Image (cartoon, rainbow, N blue to C red):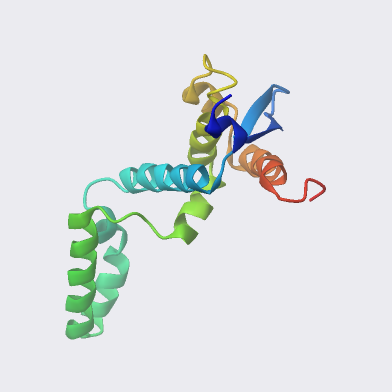
Length: 149
């Protein structure tokens, strides 16, 4: 047994087809790595222009309302975020966790030790916006400090 084994606990998560996955709850460092990986996946999903493209409606509004200094400040901050590949906010990552793509990635990260042959796309095929919320709730119960929650 390694130190990493001492710092993890396992819990079940059931997919919509009834498959029960054995997931891991990690120590603080491991949990942080999961959130960082989800942030990287979310950032990649933004596509070309990332933050700038996502902020276009707000930038257009500032232009239409002749708020040029505010627009320039926003563009400068967004450009910095794009250049440094800044990860999305924790709030955005937590929202992403409940989407089919985010949940599939998190389940893959948490279940790959117990299910080494399970591929992320296989998990993703089971998830849609409705089932993702159900499976995410099951995951949250497993991650809760109080298992009765």
